[in-house]
Image (cartoon, rainbow, N blue to C red; front, side, top):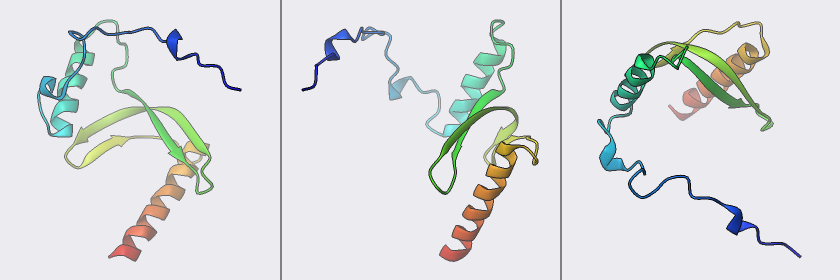
Length: 107
């Protein structure tokens, strides 16, 4: 028998505080990211606005998340640096090879 605990949820935002698609400055993702990133950089309470969480999964489906520092971004993608010898580096190389193999297969 399951117990319904859905009523415990508290509302966090009022209808005036919701973020809607009409609130976007740009519908192009990199343009919108630029606006948000610049806002974060201008906020004195945010020490490293370029810190980001990168999540991946192994071929077996085991998830992994880690923090990395964003080094650049643009229409060509988001770039960050990591240690190739670390677990995250090895997983990313494995994923890159898998995507490379997939794209070669599809083309």
